[in-house]
Length: 230
Length: 229
Image (tube, rainbow over all chains, first blue to last red; front, side):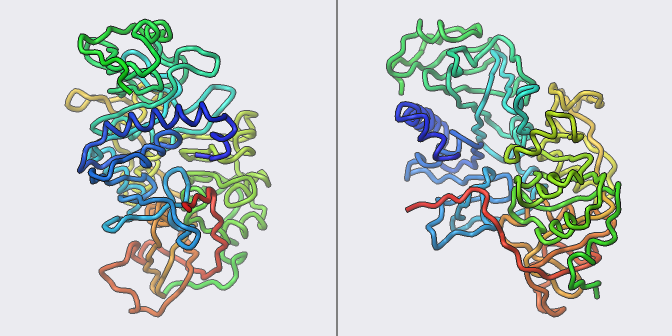
């Protein structure tokens, strides 16, 4: 993620990104193989606690992403899927793109954490294009959402116009249909279950009513909903 | 023994207008940068290019975009290239965006003699338009057809004179599948060693997939230079 981008948005925005990333880290268990998408998901790596042994998969062909390199370690031949220079941990492996997606599609990746533009109440995800405006491409997201054992979307709860990004139905072209199991935003955590969307956590500074008011999707509130959760 | 070129312009001289090319690399990592530069100089046009990305505005396949040499591109991610996005939104270039894993498998299958396969990626999305959907064990899958090319341009770290290749770190990416899927594969390598100098157990691409070699110095531009203090 471009540092200047987040810096331009001021301190509040940076804190929000960090808050989401810290909450998302709790989804990762020791021993997991994890794929982190571009943007806020990449930040999650910074918060993985030391008592967890986690192997990060990068779909361009690396199992075992390490920290960013020092100036002296910089290597143009060693990047992550966001095209950032990285290092590799001891015990890491390099492989080609087809093997990388065999791992992903084959159900060997425990957790995929992706960014999102819209998520629907039945777990549809849109995160790759805005017709006529923005076309970046889907990259590996369409494969990841089907292959990972658990797909988690992390994003802001509302867009820059204050509108809900969690909708009854996605308006943008889909990345995958019924593929998201959990949504983590700056305001809440929601699960997509067989009975629809369920609110399970509310962030500090918000009430259950606040979340329901800023969410367009139909949502039930879990009996065990955690308040002041993160 | 493989054909070993010493001149990049000569190496790409067999590539003609209207041909289909596959080009290795992920972003700018592992691209055959000197072969691409020679192709930009050659001004061949109406190319169909199959590559995960399309370079950046002034480097890699972006050089061919700038020259309007590309008629159609098949790739998965174009987010780093403003000229690409402009040509695409303006309808000046035909673009077939393909999920990255599907793209890798289409190329792998092409090189392996498999005409098509089923994958879950893209079911229920615009990618599925016009494609057969079939259910296996209660889940839906899309039929995707494989890809081959007239020429494949790849980058490797070391080659021996039999065309056996070893790649370096994540510069491997799409290169091995692309090597196998081209009718003629030209490998730009950092170093050509004597036959027998590479350990047979540690070769990534067997030389049977490679028709010609050329040694070059790469700039290896970095797209996102991220360092820790």
